[in-house]
Amino acid sequence: MRVEMEVSMNDTIASLKRNCSLVALQCVTGRDDATVISAARRAGQRRNCGIRTGQLLVALGLLGVRYDVLPRWELLDPRKFGTRPRSRVWNRWTWDRLTLAAFCRKFPHGTFLLSVLGHFLVVVDGRVHDPNCPSRTRRRKVIEAIEILTVGGRIVGGRS
Image (cartoon, rainbow, N blue to C red; front, side, top):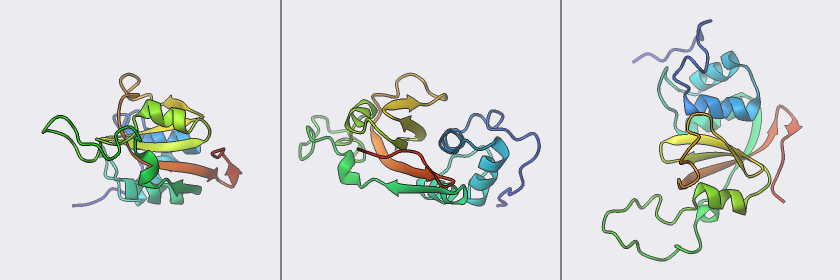
């Protein structure tokens, strides 16, 4: 299995099936397509495939972004914490997590790169930036949250 490291002139984020991880990286950094694709490929992403959270963190580092990963206990919904689901069929990763809407209410300031089940998106000052999936995203459960502190030495924002 060979990982393509070169970025061809025809590779743009739009031509790569609007990959959510590439769109999120570009939204956070403001860099051009070739730089974002090159960093993602160096981090281990294969062409037209998704990217894992660890690979995304490596790509953020390669793009000069300082970040802080929020601890998972901050992503728990206090209304469901310690309760059992009513159904026998449930996903233990998402049962007691905050929804995207609840996350935006809890963290109204700052820039965050979020992972929901099978998807990456960006939240800036409580507003969701997700051109790949504009509907139905606010009910999804937040699995991972990465707070963006600085991009290229410039302070993006922080929680207050």
